[in-house]
Image (cartoon, rainbow, N blue to C red; front, top):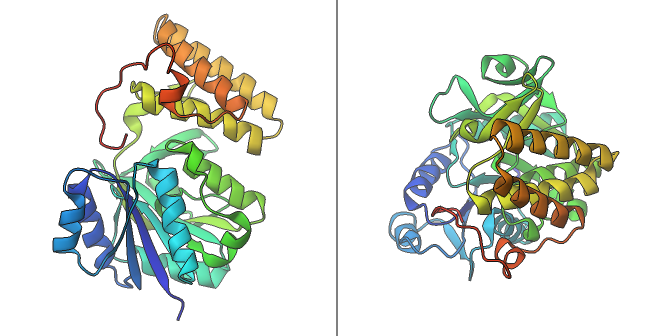
Length: 314
């Protein structure tokens, strides 16, 4: 029987991690091994893991490398250990009891390289945690997708996606330089670009905090701007989007032009002359377009780092 290693990345959220681990260890088909990648947490996470989950392997990184760095190191460890499947999730992801069993069954039956569950909102399970494209535009409604069975060609990475060992030899691991925001999108597009068979199984579920508060719909739900109000989070989102356009979108200049339109519209019209926000977007976007993936602090070293509210993931 193929062996599964669950890889969970965490940073300073031991309460969420505890619930995540309980859900993982209570699966109808439990993973054969669980690896927690700790991004140098300072909130007592190592002690909690040692006391409450001694059966779980912990890979503690010397510094916070973000989700991208955490999954890079965790997947590398699981790959080198020879596991046939790697089950990936952030610490705020809660799997339904039968999620892994259903993913594994469909992946083996359909010959998939990666398959993910449908991420539902933790606050309201009749809604999706992230909006999904349909013929009528974007939808948040679970019922619009649940009856579709297997949706080929896409998967929400790091939210309970099961990845086959075979695709990693060619596809590699997530790009550490992306840190947060968009690292999962780049990785999914990379695997798809080398011929990987990706899918979402709409009869398997995880719960995740809703992204609704950061999604701004424009042009009748056909254009979206993601805006958190946290300069550091937004910087990585803007920078990484442009980097992804250059790597994976064709023609890339069309996507860049569309991004200029939507963000200028958002900051100058929707946010009524938010030039500070627009300048952050512009600077981050230029860095991404040039492939200059320097961190947030370095980008603003000379002019002073824009203030960000405290955030446990950053």
